[in-house]
Image 1 (cartoon, one colour):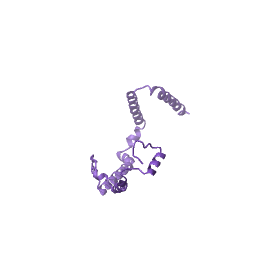
Image 2 (image 1 turned 90 degrees about the horizontal axis):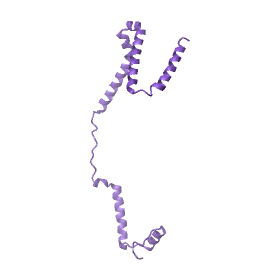
Image 3 (image 1 turned 90 degrees about the vertical axis):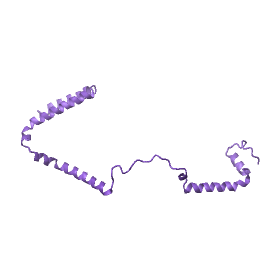
Image 4 (image 1 turned 120 degrees about the vertical axis):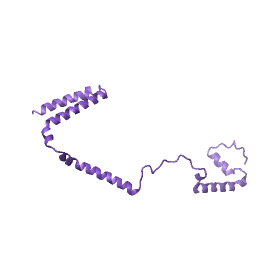
Length: 154
């Protein structure tokens, strides 16, 4: 019970401070306040656990951080090996060119076949001198087109 009530009171005070004080303060004030709280916390922690820090050696610190260092080293070596094995070098991709392709390269075999087909259809209809047949006129009138602007008689 001796830890519960002070902790509860601290949480209530923290709620009111974060609700009313933090939104109205500037980022510089919050940064300075958080830096001061961090310094106070580190000092308090070190003074509370000073005895443990005195008996601890550098080897104990190295033992506790060895797995992290080893995993980071293995990842860096794997990335280096993959880059070396694939032959990727920095800047080997280059920048894309900003030039437009020529007009001759715009035609592919499909457009060539379509153009030949349209030319053949045009050649087959050239014997009529551009005159529309009665069936074409009736189909156009049935579709709602006005053919009076053509002035072609049939």
